[in-house]
Image (tube, rainbow, N blue to C red; front, side):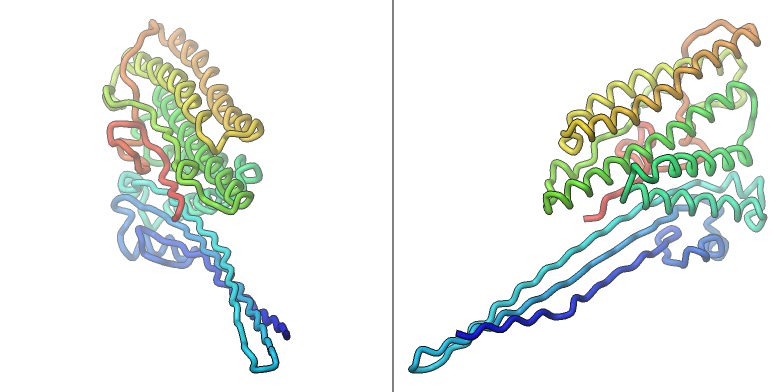
Length: 321
């Protein structure tokens, strides 16, 4: 019996593509693509897709001769390794463009900040532990710049609402990328994809019964509004954390500690704001109270996708199949 093994050279396919409202472009052409298609007059959604595929093939040929004749048996083994990631980051820049000309240096700078946030969303999906701090910083920098240039009012309560909203947005994206990077780690270790594990747990904050913020409100109403805002954030953060603890992706002690830290860090950001709010109330002679919650990003600002239009925005990070 003769045995011959042939290993073909592996073939690799790898690419990274950028998109503006589903139109493919080079990364350094994002700003020009927005201008060319006049996307600055509405929602600008930046997308990034990464694809990697490695194909290996081996052939084994076995020849046998029993004295009466010979036979040949061929066995072919194929192995494919494939990875896909996608991320998007969007802002409704209509108001921004109306106040700051789309051809201005500020609008171009906004697109650069959005592009950096997009890149870090992609990187944090691959390794959240390494890129988490950079991701949060990039998102907050982008959103603070966006709000600073386009906001209607800059009073103390308006600024507090913006601060909470920006922290929420960074928290949501960071938490979702932790989920995806942990899922990738499990996939590599077990070499499979469990449908229950791949199902992303909800991060929605229920705001369905609450009215929208109005910059023209009197300070008394704004104060009550922010009190309710913080109450909802703190109460529902604990509820959502319990839901995430039950997810199989966070079954190990290490992974469960990681997700708990994300939620605790977010609450640690919110709690000092209650003291800050009280100081504003005292300075303006306003008594504490409660009113409706402000869904900041639903009005003239960023528009991430949600599972329910009546619930708070959840960043649109979709794991490719």
